[in-house]
Image 1 (cartoon, rainbow, N blue to C red):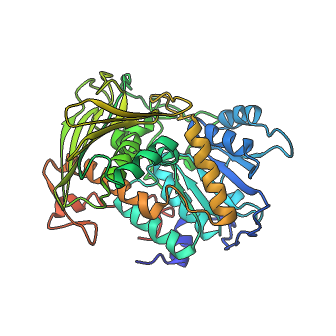
Image 2 (cartoon, one colour):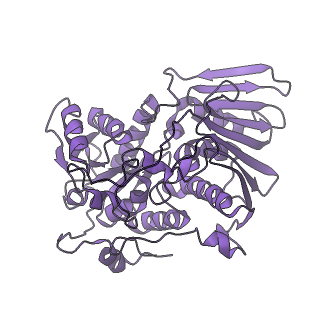
Length: 436
């Protein structure tokens, strides 16, 4: 699979911008700081920018946001301890044209993740992109292929991959802690409110709605979408399974050591409220793998009742015991449920904090910087975590179709199901889509 550079640039350029793409290799000296631009600052992006500003290995050159109010607020809050303050800009593509910028950090809405990442890679930049790093399965394929083609670092924002106790227990599982692991249950429970019924409204003067929509097919502005509720609209978002499920399903897959499921089924619906929300608020997805292993995802967006005393987490069953883990650590049980061993993180996290501000993010940012500066192995590279991203999209597709999907594990494609493959890719606004 290849991405035609000329076609991509033709399709992703706006007339009159005069934006030239060029590959700018990193200067490659370990003692130099990694210069980044941060795209999307209303929530998670501010947390990431604060971490990049605080690190001695990195420098934030640009803060990028299409909302002037958000940008001004971030500019006031995000000041480096020493050195030059980041430059605020609306259009992240201007930062890509700066040869001194080494990496783009993407925390914009999901529909921007892959197009922005590929533009950055084609401009010779490394990429740190928040989950789900894609809007559909085809974009996962495109992003993996683009990383391979351009040879830059692409870190997915699954920060639990950098959690010390998670790394510790995964190694122990590999060494036989619970025998042969064969089943994992992943869950997330929140009490999200209704998003109501939106109404057409004038675009706020401080918002560049055209640039906010970017690659997505155009839609009139409505008053219940921006800034957070876009998660629950298919045009821009990917639902809870790709929002928080990406984290937990990734941990489950990591624990079982599996790659691509061969069968995926889903049940659920929008049960709690009647409003504009277009995804499930309650969902159970079963992923079956060759070799007698399975993962179950249980998502509760609007009912916060916990599982095993945790709002989010993963339970892993093995032939000689089990492990329950979350961002705060893990507990190892024998087959009768007796606690054998516990590992707690030094700093505990708020699992329902939508910005995900925690020590694991700091470690994840430092790992990305080290990968760019010295070639240290990424903890969450797109080639590996892309397998999880695909699983999450397959969970949505199984829900849309209402029937079990069969997957070819070698090609990682749905087989014999034209109805399901209609959801494999999306349409883009004219002049904006990546080459497909």
